[in-house]
Length: 307
Image 1 (cartoon, rainbow, N blue to C red):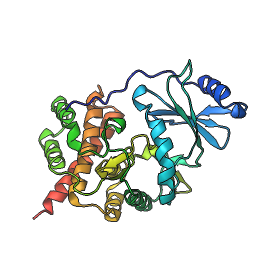
Image 2: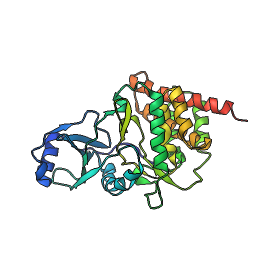
Image 3: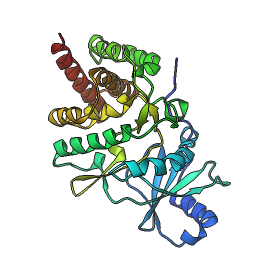
Image 4: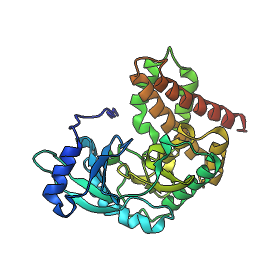
C-alpha cells in the first residue's frame, strides 16, 4: 500500500481572514483582538481570540475532517483525563474566502514543550505517561477506527511499509540501512492483539503545553482514533533523553512488542523527513539522524537482553 504523506495545497490564513470569519459568523466576538500564535501548528493555523479563546483553522483539505471529529469526541474524553485538553466552544462554517469548517476553542495557558526548555525531563516523562495511561483506559468501543481520517495512526506501522522502504533506498549513503531495516522488520512483525484503545495520534512535544515546569495540557486531537497505542510512543526518541525515556517506558503499561512497533513509527517518520531534506548536513537533517541513532541504540539494547 502506498500512502502519501505530502501536504496538499494550503490557503493563505491571515489575521485579516480570521477577523472576517469571526465578524461574519460570531459577531459577539468581533471586537476581540486577534493575533497569530507562535508555533501555531502544521495541520492547523492557530490564533489568539481575545484573552480566553483561540481560533484553529485547518491548513489543507486533508485536515478538514478533524474539526467535526474533535467537536464530537473531545467532550467525551475530557472527563476521564486529569490533564486538560482543548475545549471546542464553537464551529465555524466555510465561507467565500475559506473552504472548510474551523473551530473556536477555550484558550489554555502554557508554553509549547518543543520551544521550552524543561528542567525536569524525568518528571515530565512520568506525567505524559500518566496522561497516555488514562487515555488508553477510556472506553473506545464506539470510537473512530484508525484509517484515512487520521493518517492510519493506531494501525500497525506496516501500513507505511512501502514508504519506509523507499526512504531506506534513498538514504543508503547516509544511514546504516541494514541496522535500520532490522528495526523496521521487528516493528512490523507483530500487531496489537488487545481491544483497540484511544490514541492521540500526534503525541509530540509540539502538541504538549507546559506551565511552571508541569504538564499543563495536551492539544490537537485531529489525528486521534482507536487502535494500537504504539504510534503515541515515538516521543520517547524524538524528545526525551536516555534516562527520561527509561522513566517513560517504566510508567507505561505496555509490552515489548508494542515498544518495537513504536520504534517503527519513530523510524518511519525520521526516514521520510530526512529523505526530503536536500542538505543532509543541515540542522534539520541532523535532528532526524539523532532520532534514528536513538532508536538504533534502544533496539540494540533490547536485543542484547533477549534470551
